[in-house]
Picture (cartoon, rainbow, N blue to C red):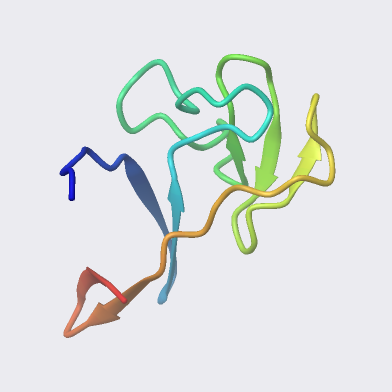
Length: 87
């Protein structure tokens, strides 16, 4: 078995937390060019900085840009005692 690196990110909205693999379904590249710059300026959508794709936070569905209808790959996370952990 080979070990590798995993790149993911989490978004917290109130008490809810969702996690996604940091990979755009359109181009297969990380979503951002700058660390921790995953949300639009309004903070209401996840944005791919490369091609302008926009994704809903709740389910990772692409609602704008070149991959409409596709989804980000979910990364199961949960909150235990206020700390985000992998599910």
